[in-house]
Length: 92
Image (cartoon, rainbow, N blue to C red; front, side):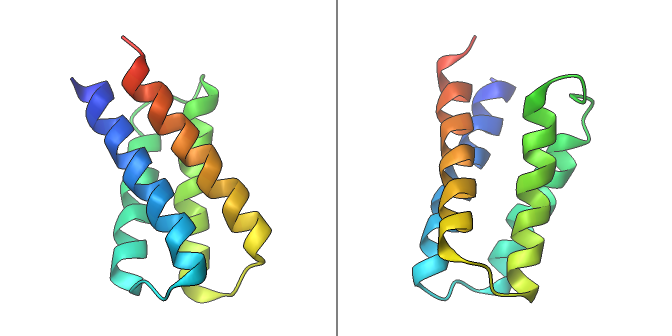
């Protein structure tokens, strides 16, 4: 059950990241998902690549609020987070 909730966080975060490149999504939403992903990564999954991907994505959300990034970098990060969310729904 918890894996599905984490997968949902990844899916929503990936969608928000992809849409934030074309549209101006508010900083509080980006900050919320950035902090949620960083907290999720600190739950002790450091031996898996998934924990590192959460940390990267959370930091990426926080960086997007401060500076402008190229669109292709955001698209790649958004697709990786979406993929991770889909895998979270398919697992266990």
